[in-house]
Image (tube, rainbow over all chains, first blue to last red; front, side):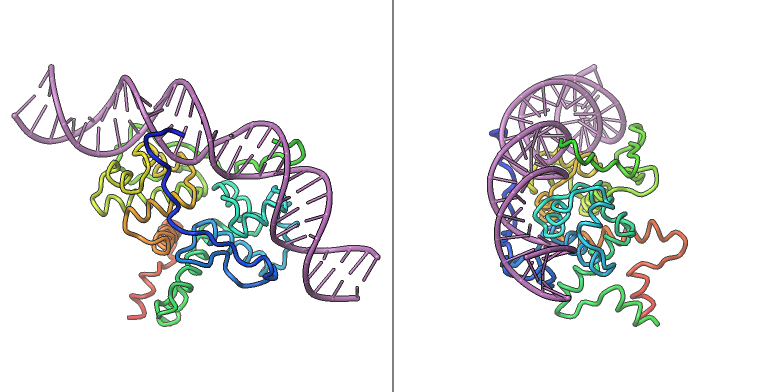
Length: 127
Length: 127
DNA sequence: CCCGGCGTTCTGCTGAGAGCAGCGGGCGCC
DNA sequence: GGCGCCCGCTGCTCTCAGCAGAACGCCGGG
């Protein structure tokens, strides 16, 4: 590491959740301030996988990665590359378009506790 | 690399754009099929930076990274970590919430050439 | 011509960490 | 007990993130 510019300090504290939490828990993988991208995308990938009734092992194989690694990605422990995100999305039969939109939707929902509407809410109003 | 599972093959071809293109060009940093996450987020970061009238050098310094590296991130050449994304978003005075939403909006806009409405359009309808 | 500003590209470097494998553990269910 | 599902730890290899230095291109102005 070069000595001129120190690496950017982590802007946020990653506080891992209780490991006692059941794996099916809806508890987010961050407990303080803003989550990082890897937390959000991981959470959403897990949610999508559960919605499809797929096991971690099965989805991982379909994506061409190890089950452990998919577990780590879903929990926001590891930083997936863009290709990995695409591969997992493919294994879940969702496009990157819909995945990022889904992540954004989740974001708005979480941050919108004080009333910010979601995309879906907007369409409902329009109808 | 372990010999058991080959790395997932790139799902998409990254074809770099013409280097003759002016840096202010609206030409996307992918020219085939679906873009990858790093292309989309990079594009959006550049767009946001231009909207704010900030130079690459200035934003990079604010984010605590090198200007060259920010250039690479914006062009989708390098894979930014979640912390990097957060740092750059902070330098642009935008939350990760709004950034991912902005990325998703861009996605819908691009993919919606055949008529899929955006969030903004939905709110306009509601009003 | 010169200069400065802005951004990109190239080369080269180092250390972090991605991604994996093996193993063990916990939990729920039968 | 068994099984399935998932998580955590250790350890490994190799890629590449992130940087620095240098050069380049383009533009505008003197």
